[in-house]
Length: 210
Image: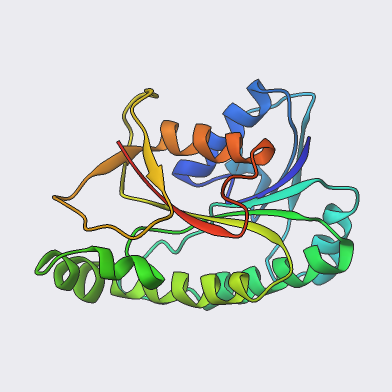
């Protein structure tokens, strides 16, 4: 499958890029600086560009099967308008180029999943610690919901650098969270790639924990 990956230089994006290549996918990594990608592979194309460069994004979307975003702001206190605008650009270009599948990495606590957290965890996480990044995710998720794409939104718990395991809990139904569970980036990447060929969570938001 041919994939465009946004956010390939980030912590989760790097793991996902490596696994995608190992699984035989052809990947186009769209990054601000090509030097941020330390690996080379016959099935990897690195394209340097900004999220507002409409023409570049349109060119890399042609003939693509799916698009994955692991984009996220680098600050807990400052909004990331360039990423929010970039997600809108990605959605519009995918619809124009008829790229059907969009996988978007969000966070647990975004949109309605905030209600799954009991107090005082909800207040501490959603209204204090992650208030700014969740605000950006909420905007992005709303735009994705309203699109015509075959999207899946992934809402993992706290991300860790642990190993890949078979202990993944996931679902799209409402529930009450207990504790503050986490999940490794390795498991997140593996699960996201599995959904490229699985329609179980098409046009659904899925929570993920270990």
